[in-house]
Image (cartoon, rainbow, N blue to C red):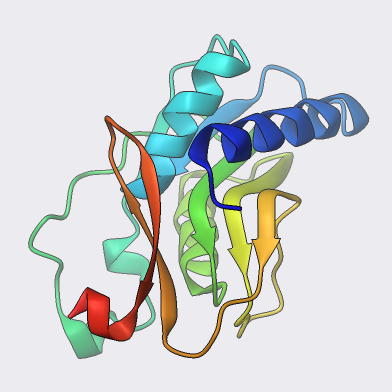
Length: 168
């Protein structure tokens, strides 16, 4: 069910359809650190996108920033100087509550107002807390209470289904 090459191929196929349907012109691909960047690197290569890959670190945009403090591994976001009017494909590894995507959109809009944003994720799981959803996903799953998904990489890229006890 969670075989990485299969999910990457599914996501690629769905992204190709959305690019055609929504007529994305010279899209900018942006990955959310860290797992989203690993997936975005794969999609950037598979889709043969000419623009450099954008990297987004949403650490300062998180809604729990004041509670958990600064992530010690914060890296600067790397986006082109012109976001205004661009077609953007935003990539993350796992869509869960929607809070990461909300933070990513806030940061993107601080750089400018894109024409449109397509949200693509490798895995969409249950647990949404904010009224956002991906435009495409490699797979949509429902997990049991106490389960979580862990992406490791970048090489080799792998998905692990963990229980809370495994993660501790």
